[in-house]
Length: 262
Length: 262
Image (cartoon, rainbow over all chains, first blue to last red; front, side):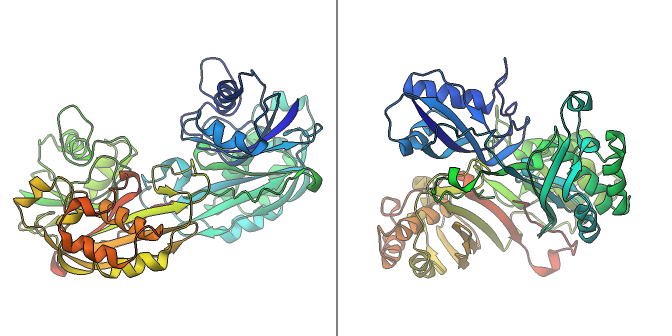
């Protein structure tokens, strides 16, 4: 019985998210079905992050246990033949038995794309959130710095009743807001994220970028631990899981490139 | 009766092209229907180029005649309220009576996007043609230079029986192959293009980029006037109509930005 790791990219548009659920097309289900078609095994695929409906991934990480004799690197191209074009397995490898895509992960990195202009672009409409006017990126960066480090992020979590049963302290290791042509990206890396947290961080920084709130307000939101004080949860379209980070000894060197041809 | 010009961007995925046809969703039809909903008039919308099924536009140009009293610049936002998100009117203006989107056009500029890597990206899968291996861009550029100028482009036209009734001499005013991250773009401007010509130029330059043909072969293809000698017609996904150029006196200065948020 081998432990097989997959690196997976997907366009989340039109899927009901990662996690298998009855009556809806999900990434997990389609990948598990592809494994069944390839090896005849009904496996459970464990993903590092359960991305929501409409959220994309440049490099989701997942694992499953298999008795198939296929060379480890052949799983990726073979599975792709059973998958829709919106899901691509970028690579596959046999990993140590104690590797778990979710529990071994040390950090995840997300990207939220915001683009602006008088009219939205129909090209790539599912890959960004549109603003009519340019945002004040300097103010957003000042606000973003207040989020870095270990904090209780309860104010940025939806479904707080559910969250309160579990610890809501997380560490944001890095948060950048690189300028792009006609827009800004939010790139945030942390040891874990609460439900809808990245999209709510983006919506909160958006209010600062619009000049509706000053940067220190974001610190007050954080300290309030009250979801009602934070900004809106932005749509899933702009959100990408771009990387899952593991301890170095668990990372095989495959030379994979987790990039989108935007 | 005013002559109203529209600047239009669209994601061609899922549409049967620009031109109205029975039983299929087309850009022209949806725009004409939007005008009918806005003004009550059944107009004929004349587009500069009849883009094929699946082809995108960053800045298609079109005109129609209207008796509606709406200020000219309000057509764009008003029409957008009746259009799907895949079609956006970027701007509108009243233009001289003798302006015709198609017959007044002096040139059109197209973009064909090629991206490469071991696995295709599911993100933006409808916005590029995928190659497994990098192409030899220097060889493609040497071949591309042979296409610039006035030539009979019959060898690059599909449906040649139809073409032969009409002159097939066109002038390519500019042809560039800028390198992009993990790919190359073909940007070509000409006074007109035969049926499927840009996609066949791209497919012919592709064979040179793969090293299957030397650059001078493209000159021989051109001179053959025989479609069978040219490369394949690449899929519509990678093709964008990016600009229609008119004589300066016909171009109102609107400061429109015809760009995609890729």
